[in-house]
Image (cartoon, rainbow, N blue to C red; front, top):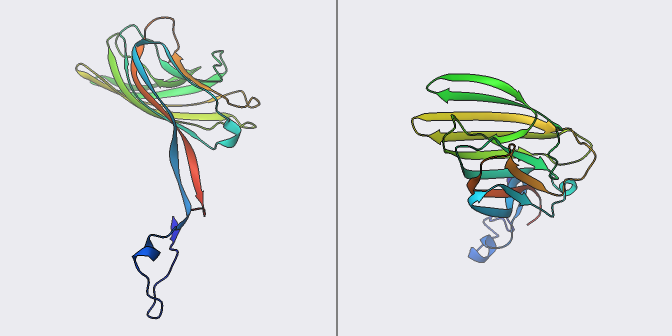
Length: 195
């Protein structure tokens, strides 16, 4: 990251505090700006982020703190509310105290319950929305429940390479269960030399 100060000090050009408070130019860096935060009450079954334009964005970044009910299925991301089998994914997991492993999925999974008990989870996920490419997805999730701990790393893509992404639906991939908590959607911004 490069920051260009508005004024440069030298023995013949002394700067004062107003010069240091002047606008600076930042380049070669990126960050995220919040699009929307959803606070989801008990019994929620989905969160929908609308009015997006995936052609204008390089990356969407999601973060969530969620509690799944004991009968819940996996919490998944569905671009444009596409719940058909248009996804290719894989899950890598580690479970304390018993096992590690991997499995194939047909979803973009954010997190899942464990052993049919109430599961508290935190996740972060990146989704790359531009058309013309397979829309790649990656998430990391830590799960906490009584006497156990589970981590998952999920990766995959949406096979639709044509449609503009205009919404992101987060919901369970099964018919039963619900969740509550908070989910934030961010978009990546690049500092290109602007102020």
